[in-house]
Image 1 (spheres, rainbow, N blue to C red):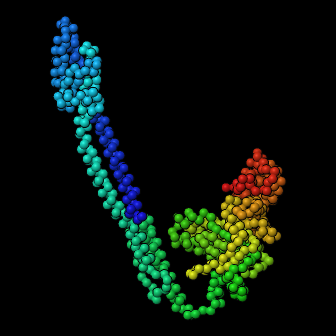
Image 2: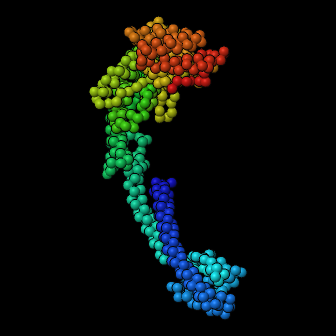
Image 3: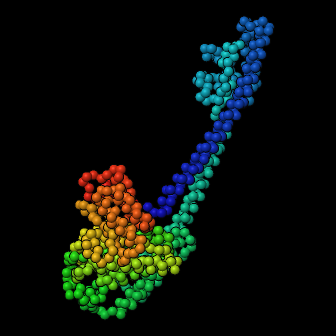
Length: 544
């Protein structure tokens, strides 16, 4: 469905309902006011009739004609004439009935008098006021035809429909203009994309249509982004053409492989890669250490920063981080969005692959502080990073299509590193790694036990750790208390463990791990975990 049709389907019914509700309310209020005015006038006439009938009854008594039927009929004839004098138009009547509902007298249009069904149910078409005359034993009605009272509103209904038609016409014209403003840049871009062929490089850089940025709303931003993108296309095409003209017409297989793997690995490893290219491209198993990093709270930055600044910020971040990976003999596999995947032990295993992976992560964290200081000087927001590490057997291979090549890794350690990275925010730690890494690095770096948690695909909980390049001062004291507290906690001595974890928080108020255990200790003191307890949080993850 087109944008214009969607606007019509939303706005026109809304306008129609609004105008109709206003007309209905106006009609109802006016009708109520008219009926109230008519009723007030009928009440006055009813009072005059009652007074007149009482006077006639008193006159019969005074003259001694109280039981004379002839004189009673004469008095009623006079009352009927008086009632006729009170009437102001043909729509008004005065009717009197005896106790058995027989018509005694009728004042008003004679044609109405002949409508016996109407007289039998006055309230159906008339606004009525009834009173009882005890002297004559009559029920007397003063009435005004309801349709005559409300006839003045017929014009209001017609005006309401005219207003509705005018509102719909105005809304249609406005929506046509609005949809044109919204869709004009989109249609221009679509036409440009349809006319552009991506299947081959042109000899000459073509000219792209430029949209006029006529507003500062989303349409204007879209047009500006399109213009910037097309300018980049022109630059890229120019560079590609220049590169294509400068290259040799044919290249050998070794040069192609070299170009591929130089994107992932340090230069001194490329030669080793080329010695066994078939296995590397087709796929092979390796015992590797995997690093997976990502930026936390990145979505608000992408929404608030201009696109050019946001892309430049990510480029500076990845340039620094991938340089550290390469320096520590790591292989960068994927960069997607704000995520970086790297590995050690591919294509050649080393004894210190896990140590290099952990050292890389710690250097990345250290580099992040420097990067954020530079960002602050440039007026850019700080970045917050989380890193997950695991080690084990993975499969590395070339995943390719006709127009894209991606040499990447798959397997349990990759999944574990991704899951562990997601937990860094819960514990306020930039780095978390599994026991597979811990066993190989604890003699090289100060390490701290973080928690035992269940991960998807793990039959039992796994232990998580973090590390520092070096540790001293109050943080070192806090870690000592933490080691003792953890032993007490898993020995089910939750009261003693609580005191120790509180000491950790006292030494290091910014610690993100001890508050989680403090909360668990307090709950486990009240409701201990089951006797068969694997050490993972009861009921799953409880932090956050």
